[in-house]
Each structure stands twice: as structure tokens, then as C-alpha cells.
Length: 297
Picture 1 (cartoon, rainbow, N blue to C red):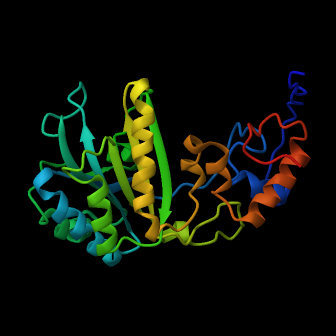
Picture 2: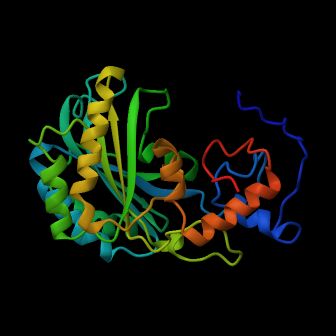
Picture 3: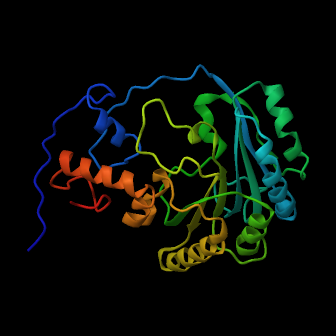
């Protein structure tokens, strides 16, 4: 028999910590497993400008910059956050000429303090090599998306994500051996994101978000013609296996979609997943929104 599902009730709810605390908990971190959020209200930071952008270094500096970044991250204050990406951007419209068709390393940086302090904290990485492009400057906070400059159009891509316990000298060595210059890696980008900071702190009102104590996140993106995507995905699996010694376990929900139900469940502890499953059974008994993510009761 074909699977049929009852239509949604389309009931509108205003969910707050006071009015519906359980649902408020689950919607914050539970992704699309409980319904559709049509509007949100939240406080904004009084932060009109940030010191932010990216440094790009050529192939010959990948090793030195990656090792320097691993040592530099632990020194940063709470006002700073950073990521580092091994990049292989194709020669196509929109890709800056110095980066097109080359293996480069991109250092992303955001600082919420003054320009002078931000430049002082970034100085060790600016001197780790000669940048091909230095695009770090003061910018409106609304332009923060320019730090990564991710493509806006859909692409045939395969993605994989994991959390890491640290990013030590040994971790750097394993990463470069698996995906550095000369390895034949087909990945468009292999990014290591510094976590911690506010993310690591439980909010005053608890949420379903787990794994706050992971130190770093690793995300791989491969782009290829559809017949070639399985081989790119297989390489990404091997890369993540090479990093097993530093695997924290699980991932963050924002990066779980490409890994299907397995990725979704790995975003949570067993206790939190059980609680989300109970909520899904209550608020979506016909599994309209679960899409195979939260197990049915």
C-alpha cells in the first residue's frame, strides 16, 4: 500500500519560553522535525561594524599557514573567531584571478572589537606568508556573508561534516597528508572552523542544541558533474576516516542535512534525541514534518 499522511492542521502557535517551554526548547536546535517556523523575534547586538574578511595564500604557503593557524587559534580573545579552508576554486566567472585553478588556503577572520585591536590580533597570520589577497577590513555587520563568499546558486555538490576535539600539530599533519597540496584531493574546500566562545555556553533558557563543547568543526565540499560525485563523496569519507583520532563524535544540526537521517541523529545526545522524538509524536503525530529525521514512536 502507498504511504499516506494526514494533512497538516496549519494551526498557528506563538511559542515562547513562558507559553510553551517544551516546544520552545525543541524548536531551538531541533531543525525541521517539529513544524515550520514562519517568523522569529530576537534581540540584536549593538554592533553596526565588524573587522572581518579573509586572507588567501598560495600553494607554497599552505603548510606554514595551516600550522601557524593551529598555534594561533588558542591565543584569540572572545571577540574573535576564525576558520581555515584548503581551497581549489575552478577558473570560472566570479572567482578572483589569483585564486582560479590553484590550490590555496583561506583564513577567515571576524573581530567584534576595534579595527586597531583586530589588526593586532591578526598580525601573526598576516606575516605567516605573503597573501595573494588581503580582504580583511572594517565592514557593516550586514555584510558578514562576504567573509566566506559562498556561491548563491545551486551546484552539484557533496558535503560531509564532523566535529573535532582539537587541532594540534598531529591533526594538521593528518589533514595535509589527506587533503593538502599534491594529494590529488578532489574537494573544492576542506574547512576547519574554530568553535567555543558563546557557542560553548548554555543559554539562560536551554535548547536542543548539543555538542557545545566540541573545539573545532570540519566541513568538506566537493563539486563535480553528477557521474563523478560518488567518487568525490568516497574521498571525503576517507578524509574523515583519516581524522578519526580527533573525532569528537556527531555534528551540528546546521551541517547534518547532507548526511540524511544518520547525520541528523548524530547531532544530538541519546537523551535529547529521545526528547525530540517525544515532542514530534505530540506536535506532528502523522510525521508530516519529520522527513525521516526523527524516529517515529
